[in-house]
Image (cartoon, rainbow, N blue to C red; front, side):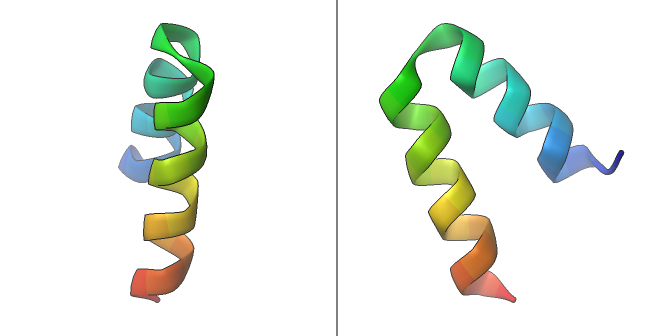
Length: 30
């Protein structure tokens, strides 16, 4: 598990929408 994956888990726990936004951002950044 990399740092981005851990951050995504935390954001998803805090809120569904932030988790989705972060996931899209990480994918788009590649």
